[in-house]
Length: 426
Image: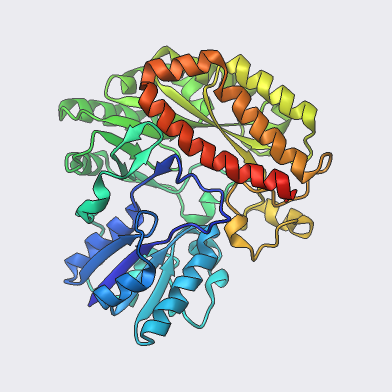
C-alpha cells in the first residue's frame, strides 16, 4: 500500500513557535518504521517546511492511505486537508491521529475522515499491518528536511522518546489522559542514540528526570558507549532540587538544557495546580542547573485573575531567579483536564476555533484587566526579560551574536502576532 504521512502547517491565527523552533515529526517517523516493515511504501511530508500546497503531494504520490497528525490547534487544518484529499480522489482513505485525537476523538468526526486513530495500533489496523512490533524510529526522512530541524539554539536537532506518559498528575495537564507512564529499557534507548547522527538531541519525554536508578544507568551507558551528544530534556524542579548528584553526572555526558515547569511565582498558585512542588524547589533547581552550566528554559502559567501588579511581581521573581529564557503561557483549560469543565462557560474564544487553542491565546476572559491590556503585559514582560543588558550579554557570549540575532528575529515574529492581539483587543 502507498501511504503518505503528513504533518500540517499551523493556521495563520495560531501563535506558534515555528519562528524559533521546528522539531522532527517523530511520531510519523515511528509510524513509518512499522509501516515499512509491513512492506508498505511510505513518504513523509512536513508542511511546515514545504512551500507547495497539499494538492501537489497528493497528486505526485497518489497514496491509497493518508495519515495526518497534529495537536488541538491543528484540528481545523487537518479537516481541511482531509476534504482536499477526498476532492482529489474520494477513494483515498484518510486517517488522523495525535494526542488530541487520543483525548478528544469526537472533534475529528467528519465526512472526509475515515479513521480516527487514538493510538498507533489503530493506524496500523487501518493500514492492514500484521506485524506491529515496536521499532526504532525510521530516520530516513527526505533529505531536504534533515538539516532544517532545530530547537532555539540547538541546530540540526534530532528527537527521541525514552518513556511514554507522565508519572505525575498536575490538574492543568492532560498527559495522564494520553497514556499511563511506561519507560523504555535503557539498552533500547542507547541502541537508538547510536543510530542518530545529529549532535543535538531533544529527549521529548513528558518527564525525563524522574527515576534516579534509570538515570544513573543512562549516564553509565552513554559514557560506556562514548556517545557524544548535547541533550535537551524536560524535568521537574523538585527532582532537580533533590538530586543534584544526578544532574552533575548527566552534565558530564551531554545534558546541557532542561525545560522546567516553574509554573508560578507563589506557593498558593503552585498548590492550586496540584503541582506538589515548593517555591524553594524552583529556586534551588535553577541554581543547580546554573552551577553545572545547564541552560534552564522555564515555563510559567499566567493566571486569569491577574492584574498589572501580578505581572510586575512575576518579573521580580524571574529577575530574582536570574532566568534568561521563559515561556509565558496564559492559563488554558485544556480538554481532558478538570479545568475544562470548570471554565467551559467562561470562554471568550469558542472551543471550535481550535487554531487559537495554542497555549498562547487568552481563551478565558481576564477577571481584572482587559484582554488588550493582558496581551500588552505579556509583550512587556517578555521584553523586560530579553533586553536586560545582563541577559543580552549572556546570550551573545554563550551562543554568538549571529545565532542570537537570528533567534531574536524569530521571536519578533511572535511578538508581532501578540501586537495584533493588542490592536484588535482579542
